[in-house]
Image 1 (tube, one colour):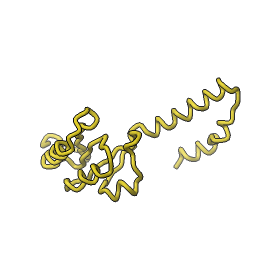
Image 2 (cartoon, one colour; image 1 turned 45 degrees about the vertical axis):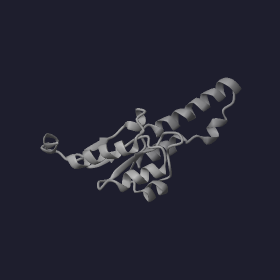
Image 3 (cartoon, one colour; image 1 turned 30 degrees about the vertical axis):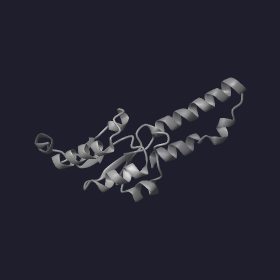
Image 4 (spheres, one colour; image 1 turned 90 degrees about the vertical axis):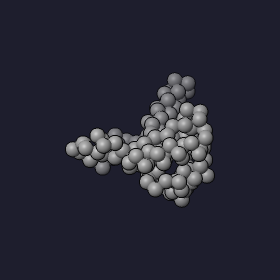
Length: 136
């Protein structure tokens, strides 16, 4: 931690406890690990794959530093309002936007291949719309 803090540029150190991603689902162990990272000086704590809002709330209530929640796991993603109410201070999207874009791409490709139609265009952004969005 000392070496990291001596760097000459600003950064945020985020510490992860990945038990729920690795099949070790002892929530108390996850909390102990996050508290140890917090005591060591981590700026933000992160435990991807928490099973429900009750677990999120318990974790957030056990920490002093901000907790980051990663959306994108089916059945384990909640609304921004629900996460804020549970005590979450940061939300990561991980690969969820990429996967949503790929789902749209695959749906369009399947429509063309299987049906020979192009109705996906009715749901698509025009090139000027995409360009305007990218400028924002």
